[in-house]
Length: 240
Length: 240
DNA sequence: CGCTCACTTGAGTGCGATCAAGCCCAGTGG
DNA sequence: CCACTGGGCTTGATCGCACTCAAGTGAGCG
Image 1 (cartoon, rainbow over the protein chains, first blue to last red):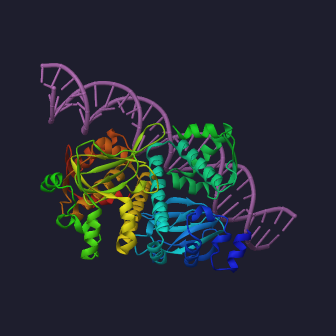
Image 2 (image 1 turned 180 degrees about the vertical axis):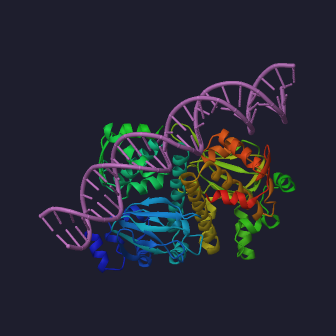
Image 3 (image 1 turned 135 degrees about the vertical axis):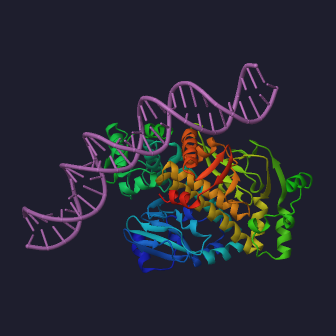
């Protein structure tokens, strides 16, 4: 809240003060390199629920890092059906799927009130030439994105509905843990419909599975509030 | 065949003579830049069916470009089930999913006798610093890989078995067209089992669908030989 | 010749989709 | 203040696509 409020008034990024600093920029940057990098980052932008950070077809300019809130990215297929390709939580980077193209090929939407940092890609490219660590960092980010996508492919291709839901919950839990939030109690930023869309399931199936998990005392759900009661059992479910 | 035979004897890459040159390296390289790039590429390596180019767990060193033949990459999940994450045809690059990690996190296997070029990633990284076009090229490659993966996610999540098979066939056809081969008559380099694994279907389903397509006069299949008879109808199927 | 392996085809089953109804709660207006 | 409304979510009943199980074919090969 404090961060978000400040950012609304101060458009320049102040990475040094940012709580996510160690998560989203390589630690190995020297002090003057760090300043150079910060100078190209556009200050925090604020979006409320359902607002687009960018829309498929817009000229590609920047990639983004989530500062607070949560973002989903979605592709539109030929017949207009949407596929959610990712949920992005604070410190996570999105927009990289469009780097190879003149226009964004997916759409990024705020799931709740969110703040993001904007990194103009052209500036980043020239910066990379002088700061090897930085080039390496962005290769890493893209490689990790490929990995995430391929894990999702495996999930969709080989796993049952229960396994998919359990995996998503544990993934969000682990990512919360990484940023020092509770891994057992948190709020799901997305709707049941979003979860279903992402996992290739219908809303009804997602709802039924959450109810079933609750009946089995694996977790408690109340609307979007979630508490995981039995990590081991959930983990066991994901492993088929 | 000629290329492959030559490469077996000559370990240094000779990109200038390579028929795929315009497809796998950026055209905008100056002559001396081109020479520098070629100098770090390891000469063509040959693999026969089922041989591993690299195996998950091997120290990550290089990314690869297919020169001839065909390669599949696969991830192993917790319980040992394999998921094929991609088929790579000549001029296509694989291995990028492992850039962020000290070891390969997937396995690359030759589907048939194949030749590949090896690009040591550490050398590539330093080269990038002096050749902006090259950095851009590899960002593009990775971004395109993310896109391919996300298209597959959509396919698995939202499309029926028939739609998935039709999409794969048209994808291979289009990629053949791109490298000046016939888009209507070609040999499928992978088995029915591979197709099913990739598309999240069983062998039986793949086989049934190919038979059905043939009965509908959309294509002819004889073992791995494929002839597409009705592009429009296949295209219509992929669009749901 | 007999073995294996990739593929095909058929019959029956089950998981998740579809269709349908109802609940809960926030927002809106009288 | 309450009545109404709409959207997100839950729950139940039924359906159908793709999986499973099973059998058979044919090519390649020792």
